Amino acid sequence: MTVKTVTLPAKPIPVIAETDVLVVGSGPGGLAAAISCARAGVETMLIDRYGCFGGNLTHVGVEGIAWYRHEETVDVEGIGIEFETRAKNMDAAYPEPQSTSHAINTELFKILADQWVQEAGIKPLLHTYAVDAIVEDDQIKGIVVESKSGRGAILAKRVIDGTGDADLVRMVGAPSYKNPKEEMLSVTVMFSASGVDKGKFLNFVRENPTKYKDWGKNWDMETTGKEDELFSPYLEEPFDQARAAGIIPAGMKSIGGTWSGITDHGEATYLNMVHMLNYDGTDVWDLTHAEMEGRRQAMLTIKALNHFAPGFDVAQLRNFGMTVGIRDTRKIIGRYNLTENDVRNQARFDDAIGIFPEFIDGYGILILPTTGRYFHIPYGALVPQGVDNLLVAGRSIGGDKISHASVRNMMACTVAGQGAGIAAAVSLKTGKTTAEVCIGDVQAELKRQGVRIQ
Image (cartoon, rainbow, N blue to C red; front, side, top):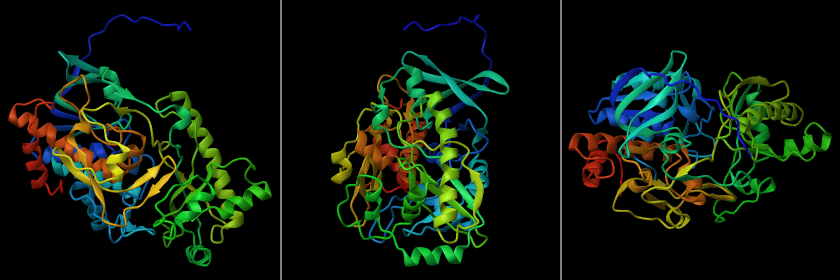
């Protein structure tokens, strides 16, 4: 098919900033990268396309950063835990109902992130969208951005792609891949409700307890069996009743999911109850339809809860997330690509930059880390092929489908982010590129910053 094109006259692009390390995208991966890099003593700049930092935590409204954690979990150590502890210290967290972790108040985390970035001495720039990459001799030299101020260039000696979608990797032409759209994980419009009778609802939950095995009523689900009887804040029966009553269309299986925090003021702040398939988060037409359809389905969800979930009788919409939540888009083809075997069988790597529990959530698999098993995340999974001085932080690191169902979790993103930020800083300080940097030097700084790598 012939595509129409237009040609615009060439224009000079002003350089609006220069920095040693530039981090693009401020989700758990990008924020962890920027802070860790600055703590290693290197000039760092952090940009984001929205008006706050935090990615899935703040843009989407995902509060459960470590909902996988149980008593026997061998968890990450490093900056990821600091996300939780800082939130608890400023009364921006609450005990997560299905785990030993704390969920994070998404609105207060916006302020926490502002303070954290300023404390670390990072140069921030919000409302700024990366549109192109500057590459010379197979090395990235910076990016081109668009904003309300117009088009500009930011020059950098090292760049970290924290976009979640490997956008910069695509821009430089380095290899990446996406699953076919029909195989991608669902997308979600997160929302919150007000007017919930907390006592009445929690009493309903106590009288009608749900477990992880109940997920299998709505989704095909493989577990190890040890997860099946554990409590899950999952709601399905009210939506089955709503379908039977005609409140939700009979064939609409995308509604159903979990709740988390219910405040004493009657706010349900994290309703993860709309799971829509066949959307590609790198296609703007799909994103447009997903936002609109997700909001429509969220309102149907609230109506169903009004009728069939005691405590939600008079609940109303409080707010939507700033953007649709995306679980699955591009992954890089890295110097090493994690495999299903790696995450299921406690893989160990000489170039480990951190650990993550044996936790898989996606593609019809749910495995919770209740037995102390964990795997290494290797530096090679952060390193794209075909370009130097560009690293990846967050869910787009190299790996197959099932490994992605593990490392896409926000806490795993902080592990990759801290590894990328420190590797960028160490490479600069030692005069090596990110491809050549000595992993021993990187691991030494990781340990100095409190990261467990073995």
